[in-house]
Length: 273
Image: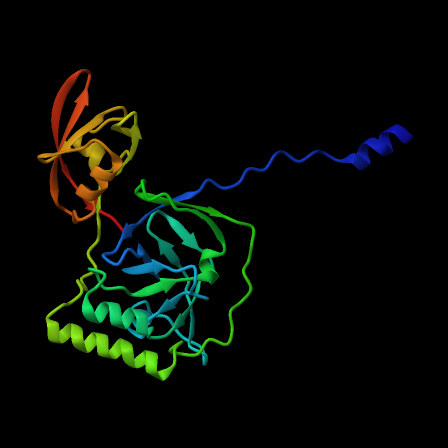
């Protein structure tokens, strides 16, 4: 009887737990070398965000908050039912400070980034993840951490002194006078529907989404990507540069190597985020 009681008290050992695999988030460098990712707020967008480890929180402008249907509290904080970063990363219970940052006003006013910037992702979101920056690869790896960052308080609406706020307005004015404008159109990125890998100096198809554009065009796992149009593809950087400006619905010719023979496939890009 003592043996049975002792055995029962031990219970059943729990199985091993494994961390969630990282989310692979596409990014690009702006003309000013800011790391830019795209995201949807409450299903609206996509919007252009820069990652800023020095920012205490996520910031968005009032127009973006209105477009996303976000309601703000008396301190100008907005909570979102869904904040989805391109690559399938969904941030739970995301909050943003609604404010017009003079830095973004200035950059957008002079068109310095090459695109319109809609917000900044800062500490209250970034601290939840371990993020691997490898600028030789087209995606950042975000691994979820078991950490809930403390709430950020005391942030005032415009997050800057009056003099600095004026700089943003002046930069916007000068940009208009110089005829420099940001590309404000939020165009969905073309979607290929295939995972690609660089192996021994060659770009190879890893997996193909069953119902994606690549599969419909006949692309298969193991195919080597040789050219996009007339451009040779030798590295993932070559491929990223060639595809990043392609829009939804655009047709591209992909030359592949399969079974020691070259083939040309016509791919009509689908709708990205």
